Image 1 (cartoon, rainbow, N blue to C red):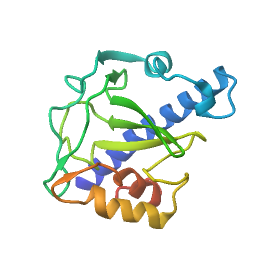
Image 2: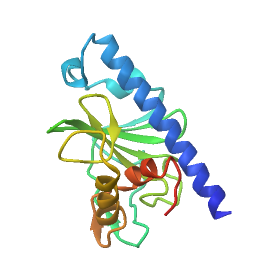
Image 3: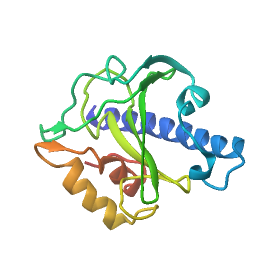
Length: 181
């Protein structure tokens, strides 16, 4: 039963990942840009490129759950920002914070407010890089190496106490879109 649930989570994550990848590519194409930085402002990106059913201005709730925990019982550092519920039922929060080769990050709860509300099960964070690659968080460029992803997974996704939330998505990428943890 648990294996089936994990596969369901990964299928839902992959669906949102594909939707996000296609939207970023379409955005870049529509702006006739060579990369996402050149494409310009992302102020209306989510509302223009996704079918949304709810918008939570400068707030996580009620689009996201009030709190999330880690697989080890810790808590997740999850800052406020304008959030959306997509027609698929997933919640998404796109946060611009250009640093290095990243233009921002996306917080995704693949089943919205429904449980289990656990980082690495239904909550994931994905970094968006200027070259259009979606990967885990890194100070360098994307794509990350398997070792870089594993290191982030160990320290951030599997961490105890208050964690940043990074690493779970990278582990799934490393394991060929399977949840092996």
